[in-house]
Picture 1 (spheres, rainbow over the protein chains, first blue to last red):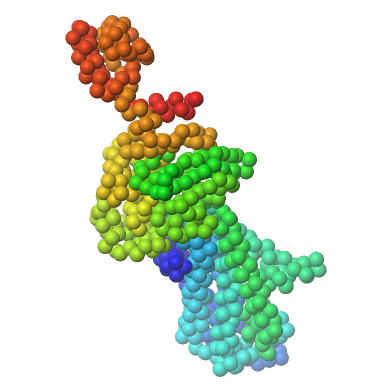
Picture 2: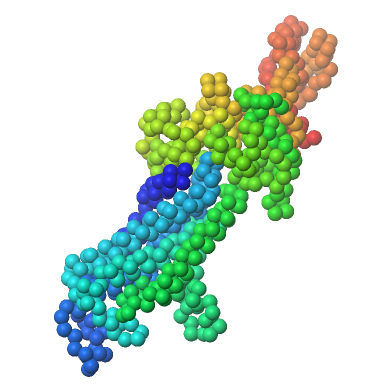
Length: 280
Length: 304
């Protein structure tokens, strides 16, 4: 029954116009970045490298597909959660608003399976969005700007990565970025279990991300104890793969914290939905 | 109650905060019944039905469906039930066929595309299967709701206000559909409705609830004393007419509505005799109108 309802969830997601909004917005945003970089990328690069020009000399194809992919990821990873929440935040509350949750809950499928099937469908949608992001950011960028060494500016200095040492880093960073987006997807589905309208969980998800991000960026000691446990602290962990050496311990910690968030949020949603009186 | 009791509800209660929506509802439905579930607005009908479908959890009391409890046999019970609660809601962005496919997939039965087409034909939606629900009228959605209810061939059909918002033709169509379910497919139907005439026409048993409590339950004919009906007569000489009927038929209770109209309770077969007697005694009978008994019965019960 879980598989059958998961299939149903895919049918619904595919038929909803808003599902294509995220993919369309992503394509448009990346298209704009690629166009801007193609048109005036060299001045952007010289602005970034100008502070190092007295000590370093930059030669070769610096503005390459690897760098563009990094810039795209850096710029969009903050905005993609909204595109994810737009679809996943509606998965349960949208059914309540339409009244179809009543129809679903009178079928011989357990409420736990209804929630799990929505989580699986939401996870697959998030994966598709991440793959599309990877395709546009990496494959299309490389096709337009060709490949080359990657220069990354980290907090502790400049890191230069050889072009044949980059692909595996992107592969793993996309996996961690997916895990971060999956946490957002799970959060919005969990909030959706508490709401009766579509917009509430989407707005709440974004509000929580903004709040946690602000707490994370405030340099105040009172928040020091909670910062490591906020999922937003670990949303940029994908960047760690572009450090040399790679801080595996820190990445592992981020993965564990994101996974714990996912498990807790799924459990809360299941408990809430099972206890809920369906009165809509 | 007997071994073929399909629904058993005993002393059901349900609170929403401090509001007691259902305080003591009890009734039973037997296999093959078309069971009328009546009560004024806010009586607790929809809450009771939602409890019976495990949409909301009762605070106390017993609900047994097919002799089993939701606590231990939820999926098994729901496989045997088809229902419409208040109004059927569908995915507006999907076609009628796709909607039925979605609900059929999780109905616990194997339903082929051919059966979906046959069901659309059965409810009078032939040729509309590919159309999106967004463009459907209320009546069409209601009929699609019935199709969704019957698709997995349930033993018990629960219909909560299935004719609400329908035009007269739609009401007749749904009524005929329910009668066909009983006579052709031998389904058990629990029907909650404000259309008392509808219940009177198609139900064999009924319960009336008011303010969250069962008021009366039983056989429709027995409760309404089906041999006796209320008739409204319009005559030119009301005093003479009442006196004559009283002498001839031994009836003493008349409800005078105005100088020309009055109501009386008589047996069905006496109606032509009363008419004949009045006319023979030169009393002009301008109209004889049977009144719905259930309406009177319902009002008496609720007001008492």
